[in-house]
Image 1 (spheres, rainbow, N blue to C red):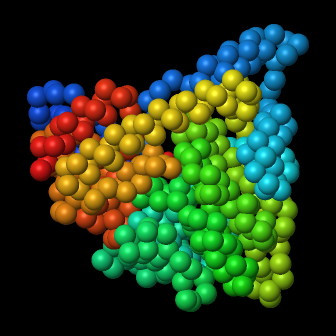
Image 2 (image 1 turned 45 degrees about the vertical axis):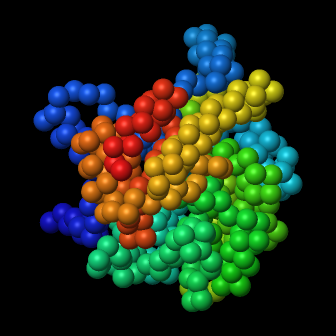
Length: 406
Ligand code: MLT
């Protein structure tokens, strides 16, 4: 008899963004068409930088000739891309990361979801609340979270990220083994200071724990004092894995390219307490289960590190940050408490009402889609997340429409 993975029945609801899409479809099917403005899922709207497009075109042409055609590439990514990443994203910031510590992949969502395969089932996991739901759901599927009561899983340690701590939780008093952190944060838009990250690294080293650091929104950091990488913190190489993505940095959500950094010193432990390096384990997993990102896409990603590419990425991010400022100001003018949006594409807005109710109200009365904070965890109740990924005209129209929520 084929037995099903019953852990799936412990999942709370459908995946957040699938549920939002379902509600939009249901609304659209029963209501006269007025343009819906989507500021829910963080999906980019602007075209790829021209440096990426040109590089991709050249790579496609190479695939058209026997002399330059390429079949399978290295699963971990081509050396040209890994070298550009190591140099520009890490060494240029004083973070000592080598090209062979970088694993190119098709998404930070997949990597943050898959990495938990490397760990034992009975580890203690700390999860911020609110949080990107992938971290929780993949551990539920793997049988690590146990049953849920009132929206919280018995097997997880929740780190409340609230206005009281500036949406940056401090390490817990109790020891945990695995910690998920995301800065700039999805969904709150908060950033962590060097001192706050240093406290997490010290905690991880003292407790033989591991930090999974999701830096998918790193390109939005404009404040010079804020670290872009956990590896800017001394000691992080032994206790942190970092996830990055070209999705939000350069508009690759549909093109797919990301990477994960696993330093050679990074370790987990056997039950007997012996340290085991994680780099060869992730190498084994990646080469067994993944066949690499396509050559034209890796060439397109490489192009963001050229002088033209850097300038184009900067103006792309500046554009979305301009949208974010419009959203934050408009929501503040309407009398909502609004944070984030300064070093992040997300604005976190306190609605003063149940967050799914606000979602429904914004959809039905304004035809604007936002993301209900409760979908990110209990501490997100009473908030919504507004994404700055949209055209300027849509952002302005959405803000004008949302005045009807007051
Ligand atoms: C989000 O809206 O939180 C993100 O776009 C989801 C993702 O990157 O998978």
